[in-house]
Length: 613
Image (cartoon, rainbow, N blue to C red; front, top):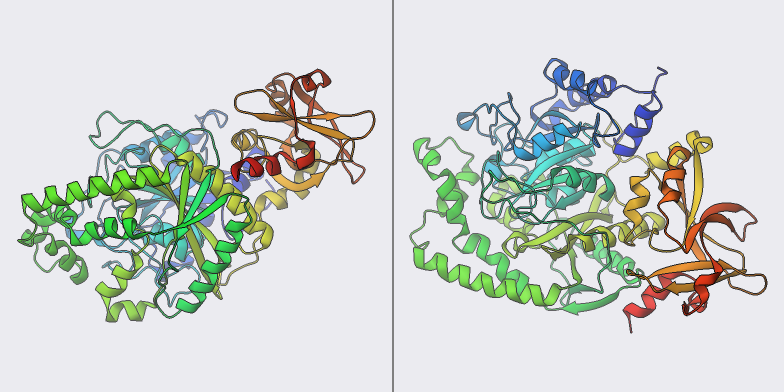
């Protein structure tokens, strides 16, 4: 094998391409990750760091697996140390609590079966109680980009491991925002599925009725690849449920806070500017936007710590705390002991449940086929500031996150520019439990918008901790492998943000650029379900149609083309640049009885026109 230069961050696509080309073996990837973990040892990322001897059985097992049938073959991932990995201690960041499980947590087992490599156990706010990444006897996890700032918690080490190129993805948990806040502070995507969609068997409970396992990654595609393997009912898990994710789609409306969000901390001004810039990006998506009173979500959020749910934490951990006084981190013990307050009576629990049920009903009525957008966090702090005010600073971090699981919402945190130099800003998209597909479609559409504007804010760390220029590994590989791929022109549901975009990714395709045809085409709306366009080349006249060019591996192109149903097919599409590329065309007979939509110039503009009618 020729020597490979590793990028600062690792993605699934980059690894898969190197594996497929026989340019890289999983063992070499693990060796590089171990080197990086040793380089960053002072950042307190790991509790049980990756070790070659420990990982040897997983590497040897890969030789027995077919990469074509194991979607995560050779993909290394980190695990928050409140999630069980067989043979490794589960500490929940408390050595006195530690135990060594004999079997993997359900989600870990599913990912291992899919070919992923579990690297080790990452640092966290003790007992998953905190949003700052500071409450661990194993050290304060440093921010991936600016070590003087907090990393976010409680899934601190999991986020920093991915941002520092020590894992392709990582598992966290989320009760009050722990799978989203660290994503925002380290420039990552943080995907929080619907409650119960991923089993929590083998996870140390914080609030068992609200806990979710989550994933940190560099893209929505990587996060959803994990979701595809992790999702599904576990009959042995009383909190598990079957929640299928529908095909990607776009919401009919976006809701934004009516009142300007309140920002805090030393970078409050920069956060406010970054939010305003994010709103401007949202306004360019062509989806209807409405500002709404977010009091409902704030009231629901207050139930998490002001209501009796903190007593659920005490129910899980109270006996351990009582039996080991003074062992827990001071701030953690203070929060946990608040759950033993006399005000948390059986009557108060039911009163809170009844209030919450009303909030859920209101949220369901508001968010049907819509997505709520908020800042992921309203600011950040230096680690010194958190030491001085550990409770107040932590409370502030949950202002836009605490409502989510109480209301049974799904969510994805996305990078969205910067609030200051090397300080990523992020937004979160919220949808109903059964409408995660709206997060997928909108998330991809927004991510593409941000990438095109050059304001991603993603964590791309060089080895000295500075932010490197964002170079998409997929784009770099296009130069290397262009003779092994073909351009494909798509003009309808396979475009970014539409229902069949995922099919493009499933066939290994990556977005290349936008383009226009010569003015020789007619665009029609086919009478299908779901509706889709047909692009017909005319002998005379016609319009220029805006479309997208994707690169697809030649080895997959024939299989992809065979799936296209009549009257659509694959033919040569003439671009205004003079090029002719393979792409979707429609047979002429389909014009009869079809709606003519050429005046819109593209399927996207046609869809936008109907969304605002």
